Image (cartoon, rainbow, N blue to C red; front, side):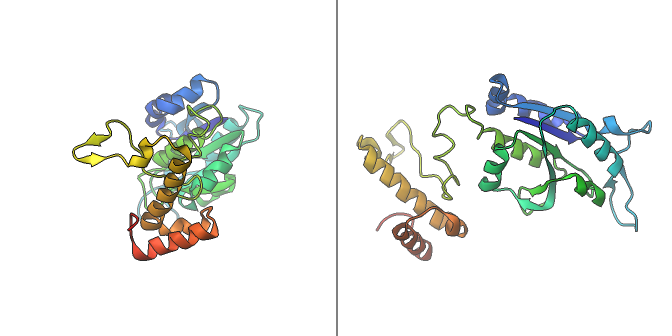
Length: 248
């Protein structure tokens, strides 16, 4: 997969894209990241990317011309068809379903803005507008990093084990079950005996049940789309109603 990011702060991405799993993905040739400075497509000596809004009002608005020039130029750098994402607080909420869909693309182009946002005409470049939550950031760069990280880690071969991306929060519409490691006893707190039993069938059952409990208590809003049996759904709704974390 190739991901292009267009921004006026390309330096923000250097350490993020070169570290951890994103760096590994590039080293393995599973992903390539290209960060482009929007100012390279301006035409005035001040490299201006924003201007005052028509009709008045506070702040500055990102101009359309640099985005259109940048998008055309960046699109032409690779023959693969690209899906263009516009990072915007008004966009569709990013969730695991969206991430999984984006991970199936060959190429993504991500547009980011600052100040009061984009000239409305920039929206015509986008195939999808995306938001990472109902709050406002100082710019779209951090949101773009979230998209890049969440998508790249799903690419085949990026994570260490084939099950790593499927046994975690939201993969089945559930939060992840509790995890433990050595030591078995610490500060008077013990690892559940079942995890030390060696009985993998019982461990899998325990983990599934704990994931349901954790989701029902902490995020009951996502139970409606979780992959549950009728019995599990009834149990989840009872847990959500009573607020209990553990079996009586």
